[in-house]
Image 1 (cartoon, helix red, strand yellow):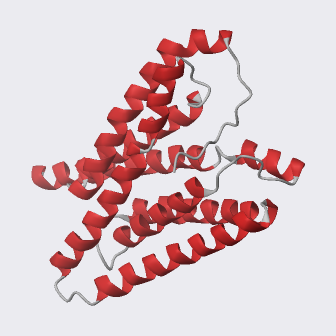
Image 2 (image 1 turned 90 degrees about the vertical axis):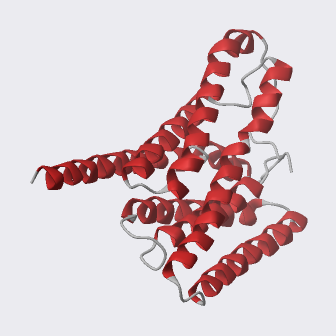
Length: 236
């Protein structure tokens, strides 16, 4: 009976961590809205880049497939968070395409088709693997690599903050949401004993702590010197 109670407690805390991760993820997903209000108001994407939304869509779709019952078990929270995330990113991409110039419009359309083709190949290829464990490893490593690269992308911003001694390019609430999201899914992965979830989110948690520490350190000097650079800059 004690064993069942122990496992039941783990399951409960896993669900709590997963629900918290979904809530924090929603805050992260809506964070670009001020940017898109500006785009809609000016009817131009100006110097904003659409690449972050393309990559976020790819990441959400890969992680969504990993969380599905075809690949892993007991990962409903991954399915919900990445379904919502993919919907938001697709909406942002459509709005971006509608308001950008012709050259960027074609580029974004091609990249969007590449994302769907890549995910289609991953889905079709993984379903051809008859062994469930091998299929889990295959998609799991892809999902983990995608998450690690996404969490590593702020390294460019961290380097910029240190060089400029300004946190203008690293909004506090975005950094906080990223930290809370990765921290929640770190716990979710640990309670679910899923290394493909807790490993990348553990890295994301550490990087989130670094970002918040830098924000606290450089915030005062950033208030003294304001620039007029766009908030979203492409480093690719």
